[in-house]
Length: 184
Image (cartoon, rainbow, N blue to C red; front, side, top):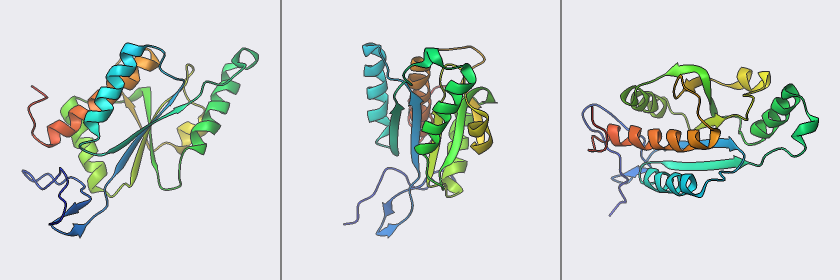
């Protein structure tokens, strides 16, 4: 019997699947790139928990770029450029790049789930979200990006943003599946 993944057509929502009833289709992948490791073990435990939960819905990778060494010798602009080069080295030509940026588009959780649905329906193979370094992104990265998303008007530590974003991805997929995680 053919393997069926989690997503099927439901209430006029179609979610990317890898195989259903023997027909193979493309499944979107999501990658989150972040700079610097998570020092707080409690945050890391929660990040790991939501990453595991998310794996039941979609292929998800969290890729950590190590902190740049000797940043004290670099200007803000130089640090952003170096981080930008490292971010670009993690992308393929077909990846769609979305920046997590304070000046990005704000979504409700339901609105974000609808945006994920649109990306999957459009045939995006890999959707890459990036959390920048302490000074944000270089101009090169801003020019390469196809969009920006803001999680809040408030400022959070970059380590906390990882957790909040991964939780919102998970929440988005539970909304798409009409599962009882999200309440309005």
